[in-house]
Amino acid sequence: MKMTFRWYGESDSIPLSYIKQIQGMTGVVTAVYDVPVGEVWPLETLLAMREHCHREGLEMEVIESVPVHEDIKLGKPTRDKYIEAYRQNIINCGKAGVRCICYNFMPVFDWLRTDLGFRHDDGATSLAYCHKQLMALDPKDLHLPGWDESYTPEELQRLLGEYEGMTHEKLFENLVYFLNAVMPACREADVNLAIHPDDPPWDMFGLPRIICCEADYDRLFAAVPDRHNGITFCTGSLGAGRFNDLVALAGKYADRIYFAHLRQLKYTNDTDFYENGHLTERGDVDIYGIVQALVQNGFDGYVRPDHGRNVWGETGKPGYGLFDRAMGACYLCGLFEAAEKEKKQ
Ligand code: DNO
Image 1 (cartoon, protein in one colour):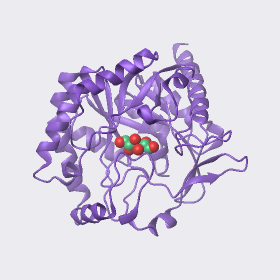
Image 2: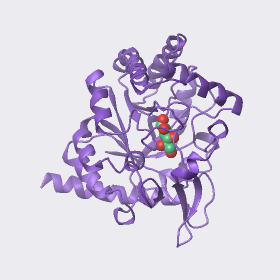
Image 3: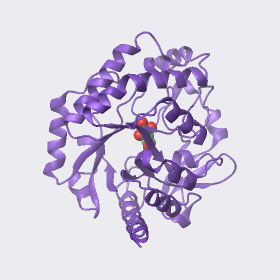
């Protein structure tokens, strides 16, 4: 297991030197943020980023994300051009020492929440989700911090129109087409692709979502068995679906999970939840059970603490503050240490 920390590049309010001070931290998870989706990330940029991380004593082996252009998800004739750029990105990432690329295949919107400052009794804040509130929002005017891409209302309107009539089957076919086209580049570059689950794991605004549950993963690996096709196991995303048994999923796919986002959430009713600190006792996700299942079944990937709370007066990107993610990382390191020792006994 390698513990990592998401870092939003030079503009992140958290400097690499702080990340390095979190004990157990091996590297950062980052991306090139100033190249439009669908274009090639220059190798020199990636090499300079890696050099910067190395100077601070951190690795840069995980990218989150190389976003997938909507034309690929839509299966438009222009997709081949964007797939070619994606292949080149995989090759360039490989040359810069990247071993794992996280991406998602959610149409238009990435993760969705309705409250970025949900207040806990102790004064901490975190992200929260209320389905009814979300459904009342106008999808043509949505934006959340931390999304890989954001569109103007006009672009959103056009995109949502293009997705009209898109089915789960068609979207899945487009995912398989994409994966088959990029697997040779992954083999050549020795880079694993790790698909992020849909967050939350159900259809949104009439847009299909296809990476939500066990049956979706079974279908994915049956269609593209290549070992470079793997999973970002995000407990907050999958965990929002009460139908998912996360401990069972972690055990079943442990050797396909190249990257784990470990995050806690607490259900407030059938569809709603708020996020919490990482401790198992603080929510409905059995973080301890998941770590045990991963370790027992041979997981050997990257881990990062995910969406923490904002505590100790910290402001900044909701979910991506320093303090609670640092505490989460230490807690997770402890769980892994215990689970690994238990396994050896
Ligand atoms: C949210 C993140 C997601 C994730 C993308 C991966 O905090 O987990 O935005 O980075 O879905 O492509």
